[in-house]
Amino acid sequence: MDIVYAEDTRRTSTLLRFVDSDRPVRSYFVGNEAYRATEVGERLAEGQDVALVTDAGTPAVADPGVTAVAAAIEAGALVTVIPGPSAVTAALAVSGFGGDRFVFEGFLPRRGEERQVRASEIAAETRPVVLFCSPRRVVDDLALIAKEAGGGRRVCVCRELTKQFEEVRRGTLDAAIEHWTTTQPRGEFTVVIEGARTTEEVSLEQAIERARKLVEGGASKSDAARQVAKETSFSKKPIYDALI
Image (cartoon, one colour):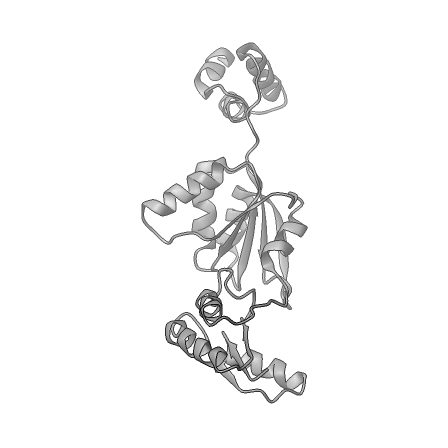
């Protein structure tokens, strides 16, 4: 290896010293990747071997690196990957929601119509959805999804995965919002949201009977009607009207 490009040169230099490597290290992050990609392409065209590492995560997966891969392909270089810890697959593994099929959404848009659209799509998705959240936005992101999916939807909130202060909390969206509203979020968050349950083909009479059983179990008529409406093809109103 002739040179190493790194998202965080300090962390990568520490790693290289640990393995007794004296290879030069240059920065490669969001702010400079446009012109660094050109530099990478030129080095590869000259026949050099180039490595790209990120601070925590995988290059080109919600991290800098797509431009470097594109430059390498354009230069006709061999592009290969040595997998490291992945927050996406690690979070899926510990969530308990299954990982045979899932959706990776990355970071939600900070504002605008697209943010609302993405939240609606996540709420309707039947596969588990994996999100990245910054500590400043994790509560807002969870609250937005809870508004669309309901506060009772199960979620697994992972913090600082594979690091010293790793933390995994499972529960409902409402519980997660309450916890991270009263506890200052720190570090990097990976959130796994349980997929929506597909609606069942039942009659209205069966749906009403199911709601009555929920009420007998202690649920309010409104909550029971809302829950059954989510699980079936009926709206809340006819179920609620029958209960009252």
